[in-house]
Length: 66
Image (cartoon, rainbow, N blue to C red; front, side, top):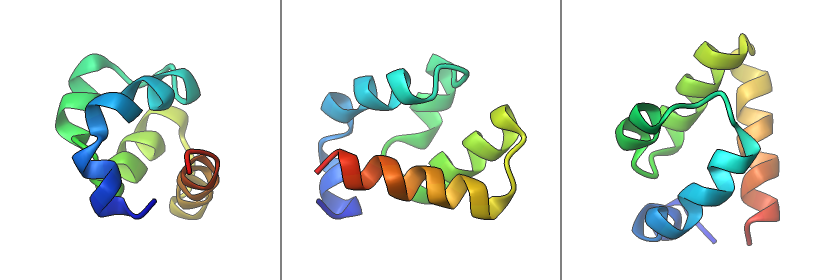
């Protein structure tokens, strides 16, 4: 699944993302709206990850979501 598909199916995938990253708020998910860069940035902020750590976490989640 590519990011265009994730964005299109965000309402369905949001639940999986909420389970993965429980520190993200409903407001965070409204801002993210399936945008990869927004998700990475929010994970960095909430979890204190480096950019690389956040990118890896999102890539791993993306791979499992397919």
